[in-house]
Image (tube, rainbow, N blue to C red; front, side, top):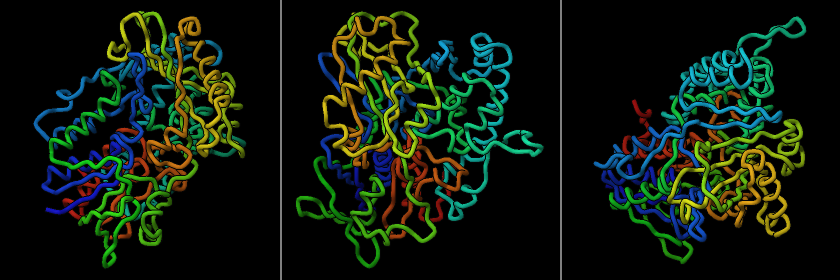
Length: 504
């Protein structure tokens, strides 16, 4: 039985802790804040409840596997999963609206033809076929296996089988998601539908490799799910599973250093001056934080993937409304920017800023647990913003301006919104930074192939023996499913050793 010290109580860290405890190890988690979940938090006021991190769960099989492997009670015995249908409603720049059925290719094709015109469904369906091929080529190396030592192969090869396009008498293949949209979808609304999946992770579709086609495919193939009571309930269930498996949690315990002995991680130094000896250290922190805890040269190998740079953040506005949620309201509505070029130029330009009329995700869960009574509604608005120093979000005037921009956009999807509004709260990148320790409130994107490896993440193993990385800032990257996968990979590397090659 090994002693294992885990830094942080994010979703990936807790997933690793539960699996390691079941394998017979003694696991202790040290979390600098007073609660678990990392970015998966909850805000409550006046009987209203809101998720302030992710609001929906893609690929729930990752957490089903976690619960199967760590106890008798399956995931569905611990939380109530609800399949969201439609998967999303889209309001495009020209006012056209589209409701996308959940996990139904035929339904999506029919809905597109009806809403956007004959032929659009067929083009999107053909795109999904190619996206599936990219998914099949990258699923194991990017989700189910430790990062390959020769990861450069993933960086150099574009898995998306784009069809050839003739331009100036030359044949070209789409290298970016924007080129896939322009050359293969050929409709600004289909392009907006495609690019919204990248934008949701703070990725510029003009620079994001075509391999990002796996993002809409993942949602199409495996559906979109909601956890009754909010995604925070998933974090609670994972935490309680850890406790049931005898994982020790120490909250308010800031780690200030990783102890090293004979070139191997040997425990933790805590902010109160105490130490915790360990045979393995699992770090669920950002690359910058890990660099401060240990010498950088001891963590990264010479040929290792560099930490993902340029990650964006999120601005979230929580709305408490009088009046019941109307019947047949979509759980999620994406209101697309009226000017794509201006939005992308503002977000990803030389001096990134907050777009005046950004793409906004509007979440309207049909969940009585989130409201004081059925005569009220809780709505969450979110949009991508640049990661910024904490001080940039300190002024009330700045918060009010940005909240007003999101509310103005949301009015396109929620008639009479302002007349129903009781109050609102704003969650900024500074709040994300406080919860996760990420500089500027940055939110990691999932690992993607191609693009010279810019969207890969450092491997779970490090150059220091006994020190491993877990969570969104390590392989396989950001997002709830990816965090859960990182926990499985780290547990496998500790239990089975460096020869571990992932689930079969």
